[in-house]
Image 1 (tube, rainbow, N blue to C red):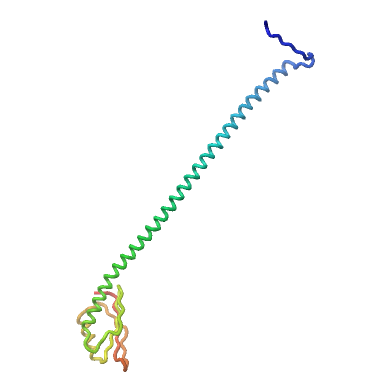
Image 2: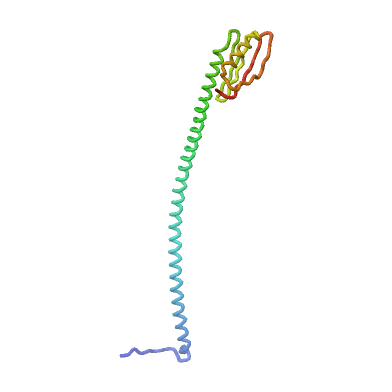
Length: 180
């Protein structure tokens, strides 16, 4: 038996066939749009969840890279300090060679001092030698100067002062800017 459609509403209240079709069309469109909105909301939620996971992953990577950069900076500072110390050591070693030459030259000067002439003061570094001699007579100073010139201990010797004091005698200061 076929299903019978029983309408208990009076005919004046029943929807017209065109209006019912339009209502059914709007229902279908609303269902499609509702499905599209639901799919969009699910996609937006998935996107937000994915971005949250990626954000935390990026934060962890950032923290790891920051820690690594900090350790590399400390290693670089140590490397720079070591390089600087090595340069200073090279300078000291190079200076000690010049210092040694200047000390040998000063020792040679001391060995040619005649009696009556003495070293009053001496200052030696890697690039120059300054020394002062004192003697009681001009003849002793003259003997010392002739010996100093004859020995050619210093190629460039500068006579800084030559003075006489009745109490201490003659005082002569020299400065040499380069070692032989």
